[in-house]
Length: 343
Image (cartoon, rainbow, N blue to C red; front, side):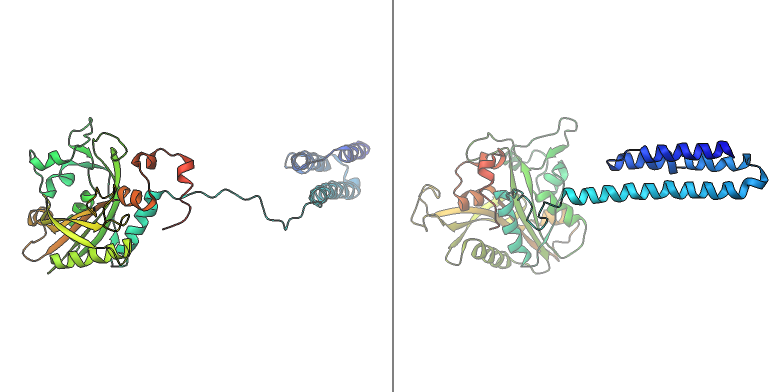
């Protein structure tokens, strides 16, 4: 019993002398004295060595010691809390925090969002697809069989690991994948990045962005295509813009056309942007070729459709007065931070 009293007194002195100035030291106190292998639990095990007639008195002493250790731990924790409060007492917590710099939106993203939002108001959904594509979805299904001369219109990046893989030259591959699903009618726009093996200059790049559109249903006509694009142009460039269609050729549409708008820089009077013609080409379009429908297991005798496609960089350059397409991909913050709000 005497040795037990001596241990309790020694442990009390150690507890009182244990310095706690932070949360880490408070945890060290808890582990040493109150943990599962701490001194309090160890000394409680001394009860087995106490004589039977002294167990009641020893039990009371051990319980008091345990309460003393627990009470001391709570005092130290409370003291830490009050210290933290006093440290922040001179700080006005109602003041606003330091401002964080706002990021900017990329001009290509701004233009893409604007284009897509216009077609979404007409009921077009958005579809996306892979940028590394097989030859069938990028060429074959689009009425461009092997050795077709129209393949020379697009300089293609081929993947060395598999010659059948290419970096897609247009987002028309997404049109094919949507048609293959067989869920008709289809009314979708397909934005995305495309790649062509072209010399990089102020006017062209080896990668750029497109938005293509596809509408397939029964009794779709070229008049539906024209009215859809008229609406787009008015919403995009204003009610006063003039439009013209010129016959063209694309292997995947027949008939095909290119769409021009009156130059919104000079108003049609002629400038360097429109090469003194008063017109700016903005997209290609046409009725989906019956061969393309058949390749995707759609009956061309029952269904017809139209498709269109446009670049994003050129409209963005015209809208923002940008004279070098390379600025879009150089990540120069001085350039990019100018575009902080939506169109």
